[in-house]
Every structure is written in structure tokens, then in C-alpha cells.
Image (cartoon, rainbow, N blue to C red; front, side):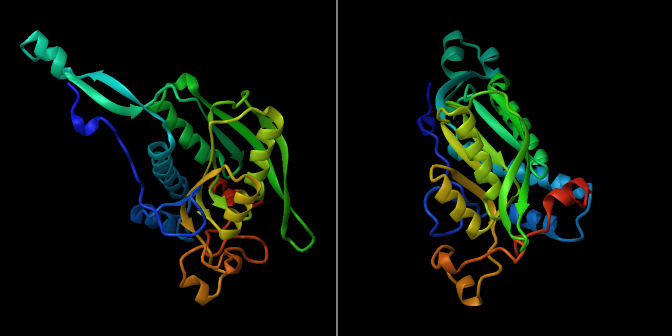
Length: 278
């Protein structure tokens, strides 16, 4: 017997106001922001750093699953069916029915080494618990950003990959902590398009922090991509711009210093997550 309240199931995450467009989701989550502030502080060291990254990416991927993954009508037998005395009553009332996640949804999570190793693995483990593990895959890209003589980022290089096959019809997620210039993620997304072709059902970026420059780059290069982040950093903007709703004066907003690191940011996450300062 279907309870009317579960005929449909909708979810709307709490997000900050901005003018970057519908494909940009910057969550408004006090707990996540508190943990992220701790992660960005110099007092956070290993092993706390990686524990915080795991907690934050669980929060982020749960929000993405709730909002972006398809639902189907499902019936699940409750334990109470065995104890209900009347057979007909048990068959009718010992059932949980309603809109739930479609466990057959095919997904690929892309590990962009090195800062993306743990975020992708965290998402991969969550997805394997929620979906049918047979349709969940993790790919790997070895990338490094290329820096010019002025120490600005001029591109990204892919030096190796381990990709499990086509992505046609799959949700493809790119969990990478710091969305700074957007160069690495744009290159990774383009690599999938050029190498395999086809059409993923959705392309999603999952970042802890993004800048206005990152959002602009991804929207320009790949307008179909849906972006999720826990925090927007535009700390190099003027005090006047910082008083406005993000995106109001997008051309005057900046979250990058002269070396293309995020401000206020949290430093190099590839370094702190791996205790490797190169």
C-alpha cells in the first residue's frame, strides 16, 4: 500500500546565492565549511588532513547523489512482513514503496593524481555501497600543470592514464579538491571527449574550493558540465566586490594570486595530502 507522501521524492540542497548560472552549485553547509576551514589551517596535519578530506567528500558526493542521480519506483520488503499475523495484511502493509535511487545507474569517478586520489577513492567507496558495484568504475589520470616563465599556469599535461573503457551513457564525476584556474579539469574532460567520444549522461566536477576563474573556464570550455563545490574563494577581489553577490561583477572577481594559487585557499593540497613537498 503506497503512502501518498512517497509517490515522489525531491531534494533541494542549501546553496549560496550567485549569478554564475544554473550549472553551478556552491553548497551552504555550516558543518562542511567548519571542517573545510580546519583543513585549510596550518594546524591541520596528517593524519587529520586525510580524515577531513574523506569527511568533506562524503558530504559533497551525498549532495550530488541526492540532486543528480536518477530515481525509480521501488518496493522493498520490510522485516515486519514476517510478523504481521494476517497473510494479506503482510503482503499489503509489510512493504516499503516509493521513489528511490536507481541502483543500476552506471558511474565513473576519475582520479586525477595526486590531489584527486583520495577524493576519488572516497566517492568510489560511497558509490559502491549505494549502487550496484558492477556499474561503478574508477579511472586514473596522471596530470601535472605546466607553468610559464612568469609562474602562471599555462596548461596541463597528461603523462599517463588507466581508463576502463567508454563513458557513453554514464555519469562521470571529477573529484578534485582545488578548482583554481580550471586548466587541469578542463584538460581531463577534453581528454575523455577526444579519446572515447560518445555522450556521458552527465559530467560533474566535485571541488572543495573553487574560484571565479575556475567557474568561468569550465563554463567556457564545457558548458554542459555541472559544478559542485563547498566554498567559493574570491579573496583577491576588492572590498567593494566582496560585498556583492558572487557573479554580480564577475569580471572584477578574483580568487588567484600571482602564482595561480587560491586565496584564501588552503595551500597546495597535493603536497599536504601526501606529505610530499615537490
